[in-house]
Image (cartoon, rainbow, N blue to C red; front, side, top):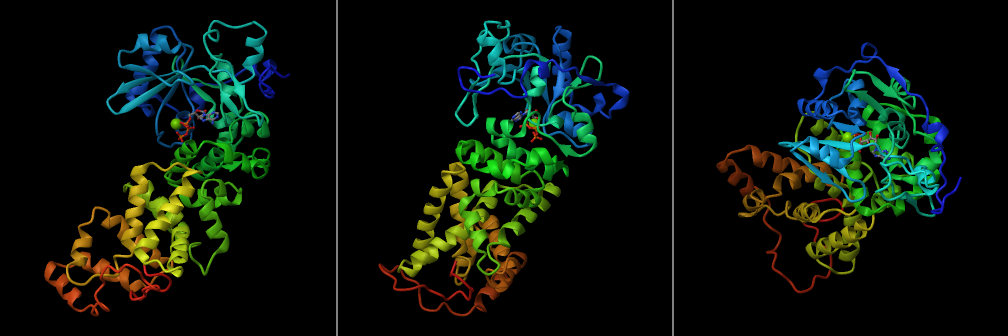
Length: 468
Ligand code: ATP
Ligand code: MG
């Protein structure tokens, strides 16, 4: 079957969509109402009482089945967005591509989505057999590679299930009777620890290449295995990620590395040839593996991030991004220094250069690039501690992050331990001891005045590679 857009529906033929759901009785699954947030329950009850279908779906059902706490609760219904708005006063409709209802409870938002049809629905609309739910919406569009450009067609519950990405993400918890409807075998796959894409893997990855990243993310985060058939085409199709908008890739990067399993996610992404499309500059550095840096710095930072998340400590994307791109920034700075630039200027230009290149792949918001620059620039100031400098540096807004970064560089073997140890102690002792520590420092080798031109690198910090 082919339609005027050139899209080839595959799994999405009507015979598959008409598939009967397996019903898992309330007594045969572990989810109870007590596990569901009060706000989600209010939304489920509101829709149900108004006579609409009312299901929990997606990650929250998956996570509850695994005994994990869901990040958020998503609801699926046959009510149209406008109908959902009529049920809840605290509701706003969002999204141009696909209208969604957000029901607000203070900081918690419950997302309510009307059943959506998979791209195959175009056949029905093209043949003039439109249902009421589809007539006002736009039809599906795909580009030459099969990527879905628009997919906002309302559908039935069955259709909503098969357009989802993985079987474990397509389980529906029915508020009406506490049963789970499973159209695609997700219940068994979850029991067997398998991540299986719904339908033909290649077609589904072509429709949306981000699904490849999602497969890796769920496998690493939930400790599941990607089903061999779903895993097989990933390497060959990894190049499709190049065409995914940089903003979407950035959102995905945050989820990939702030999900609590950053290190194993990173390793799996590299193994699947996907990492290079997120951080091509880092991949180049990793491939060179100069000494054991930065091959060690990135995994160290990722392990660090995982530990912080496990301990409930805050993490900032800027830190991780600064680590990811440090090898490239340093390499570029060294090149500029070799050409006669002074180190501060070299680092500043290198930062701009590296960030500009990175923005073509993942668009990092300004608030993060600003922090990354500051963290990088501060690395060159840690060596200069005499006089009031150490005190001034400690007052800097980014001191803590920059200090953590310094220690990580030290741990990776890039720089001598001495500097990091000194700064650790400096923070622990009182003001008198701090003054004493400063007085014991070797004198500054010549006063650093602003010079118009430097002839070569200034290696007075005792560091191994570069004076930053
Ligand atoms: P988590 O929120 O824990 O990262 P999730 O599965 O809830 O995981 P979301 O991005 O919140 O992920 O998406 C909610 C649901 O929407 C998914 O479970 C899946 O059913 C569906 N979905 C999300 N992204 C896609 C996609 N790219 N293709 C098809 N279905 C998707
Ligand atoms: Mg979710």
